[in-house]
Image 1 (cartoon, rainbow, N blue to C red):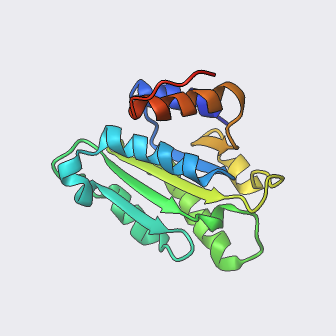
Image 2: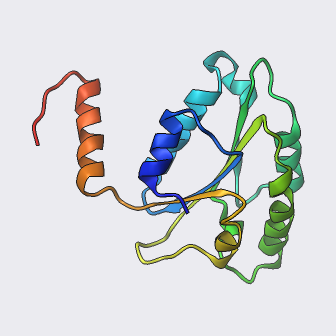
Length: 170
């Protein structure tokens, strides 16, 4: 598992992996991180062609695999996002388990031109990573997004004010 600070540094250094799984309670922070990855990898003019989203509750894994395997248009990379990827959570639902098994087999075959991001939001602060995600730990980059605290929160607030050209102290 990669801590948020390390993940943020890798994104700034333009060092990207082929597959990410984001989970946690802070959906806004997850979406901001995804936006940074998209911004660094997809040209704005071709965003409609190279940035694809799927709803994890209704996604057909075969369609997801086909999308990942398709070569990006007029760009070096494409980003595929699966939000609400509930098939990664522990459940007894046979359909969700089949999706997970297909996805798990495909992870090692993700082409270099594709960045696949899956995320799901925890229902409460005490929820932990599922056993399914823990099994994928060595094969994908997993990051848990908790609420920002301390220096991370101060840094985020300072950036917020710097963008708006306002000066703020601690």
